[in-house]
Length: 269
Image (tube, rainbow, N blue to C red; front, side, top):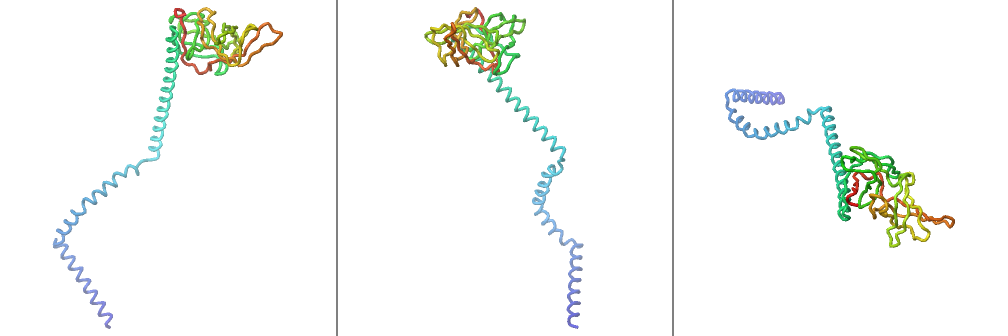
């Protein structure tokens, strides 16, 4: 019996509390407290909502948008890489011409810079070059074409209005008079070896030629000044039964690496 009395008492107390709470709420006695609490927590709730709003675009971004942005970034990267490559090429061409100009000024030559338009051959097999200077630029047949600090590439063999053909020294039809860059100056004829190399023929038996000698032009060809570098001696061939000795010559220039060349004009010879 006592147990049921305790339960009834607790129920009456709970009902009383509920009735009092309802009366207090509708009477408006808690509004001041509600206003104070709302004012106190408003900055916190505002910051929370702002933080959630700042992240909402991330959640709303679709896969297609991400893919489009990725493609755009890749395109921009490719463009930057291409621009960097173009800049490096231009800097290399500028350095090439600066070297050629310094050589010409040292020798008091007048040169006409030209850009290689096309070539027949590869970096190791050189036959012809086509340059973007021709009759309108004062170019004529027989003018020597150099690269770097006075290295002979070849000779102009055909001239058109706006471009010229250059026969490289390695061309099998190329014949240039040369000599060793030594006190004895052993001389001979530099001939091309089917685009792959050079040979120096018709060297007198009593002249000294050794491996490593630098071969330069002798100045005996029209328009070609003396001292232009052609190559270096790799091997000397001196057969007792032959009237002359000869030498295998390695070209000084790699023919695939020259984008800017210079034509030496006759008034400087």
